[in-house]
Image (cartoon, rainbow, N blue to C red; front, side, top):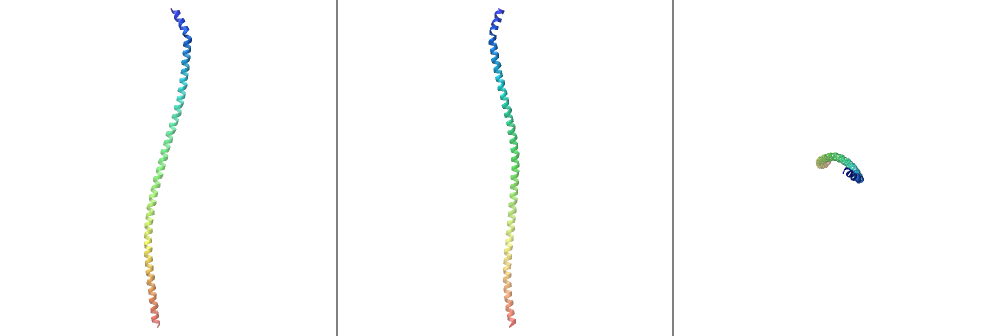
Length: 127
């Protein structure tokens, strides 16, 4: 019985060898797939890390742009205020110029009247 059992197992040996060979090939194929998947995971991890750095860089650049924008807005507001003050000052100066022109015109008219009167008086005394 032992000999028969051993002979039956011996006859099955080539089948076991083929099955073992097939299983080893499948294992090797799975190992290759695992290695490829690990490479893909590493590549994707690298891409994620790069994307995170790019995101952080963009956030920092965005903050810089935001600060520059706010500074530009403040400068614009200050310039607007300065412009309004300058325009107000210009309007005051225009009013003063108008008053001076009226004063000069009146003074010129009074001078002309006084000159005419002086000439009349001179003519009157000359006679």
